[in-house]
Amino acid sequence: MSKLSDATRAKLKTVSTATVATALYKRGLRIQCIQDVHPLSTDQPTLVGEAFTLRYMPAREDLNKLEVFRDRSHPQRKAIEDCPVGAVLVMDSRKDARAASAGAILVTRLMQRGVAGVVTDGGFRDSAEIAKLGFPVYHHRPSAPTNLTLHQAIEINVPIGCGDAPVFPGDVILGDADGVIVIPAHLADEIADETFEMTAFEDFVTEEVRKGRGIFGLYPATDEQTLKDFAAWRQKMGR
Image 1 (tube, rainbow, N blue to C red):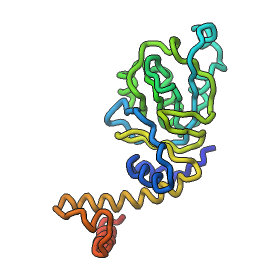
Image 2 (image 1 turned 90 degrees about the vertical axis):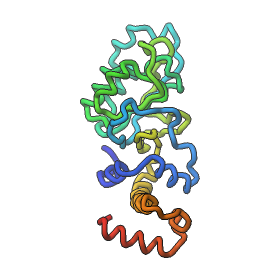
Image 3 (image 1 turned 30 degrees about the vertical axis):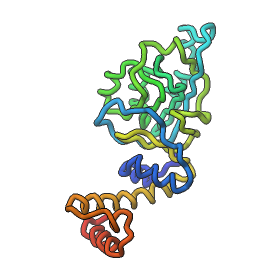
Image 4 (image 1 turned 60 degrees about the vertical axis):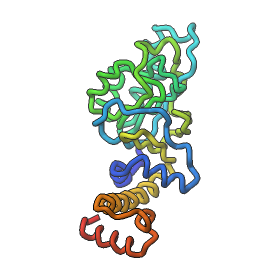
């Protein structure tokens, strides 16, 4: 059962990873951004969901032959079928895209099962095909045709490092056009509330700047008039 409420999920879908990074920074959390991952498509939906993790390790050739994929308990295959509806499959691929974390068939299966999206700090094979799915997917770069040569799936739903960010099962993943950030599970509701409010203020500021207003006293709001103007804007905009 997901612990992420519909209200928190909806709020996070309206905010940016940059705004969330600021809110986390205020709390002393500075390394929550997954480094060097990119959306496969420029118009894919915003990604929000709880982390379900898969860890890869360097492959040992005698244990990572083609026949291991026939085993229903194989960690990669099992992760595809066990990742909960609404969750995000986050894969620790050791920041190595030379071998694929998965391909189009497995990613399509996740989409059909109702998973929210997929993130790897490695890469995907069939990346052009995956990009056409309209499904939130992030990786470092397209990979070589096989995942047998370097990676060995070893463990499911344990704490991992993905792109230098710590990811614990159940942490909330937010992905947008800029990248992916990890929100510790116990902070998800308050971060959603705070960044929802921050986004309203930033939208107001953006409108003011486009009108020609300077940033001093506006951003940050050190002038009392800014707060009055923001309150009036919120009332007018229904926000």
